[in-house]
Image 1: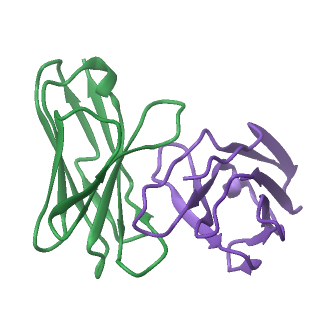
Image 2: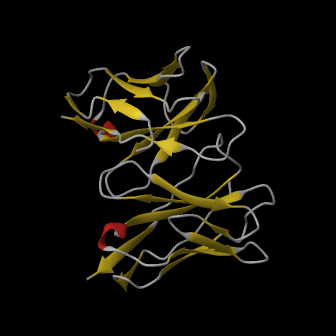
Length: 110
Length: 112
């Protein structure tokens, strides 16, 4: 599975958009980009995934660059409850192992 | 809520003992994956079960073993517990032909 790299932390103000970057320069053509988040000591929560096209759901938007070497997760209106560790993962599908790095810690400030 | 449940929530064992952790998958999901998460680290893949057979394994010793039952629920067994086995153990379920794994809340194991 391709390795992903994320900055260790970032913060944003409540109500503003949070843009979380991820690099995956060695991603292969059949690997999706997945985003999960983990609020302290809970199980990881699925957010969104995509292959080539940008995706949007009720939680977030995922923007994947045309060359697929990087992506950005956008939380459009961050709230305090969005404070968590966010993991960007490259994987071939639901039944492949998910290789988690250390993720990015997002702190939303009032 | 993902519909994936795990038991027990917390567990304390001593070195050398054996432990069994349980996971019930989301309805309709036939694949279960287990992960270990040490403090301050991301989850690490232990193994996956599909149709009661092991379907991939991470870098964990044989004293980590598992089972999957006909109803797709699963157990993780760890023998000869070591202090470093203290971690949050997570299971995730998925369905063949779909794209997403859904995680349970985890079992916190402490080995003294």
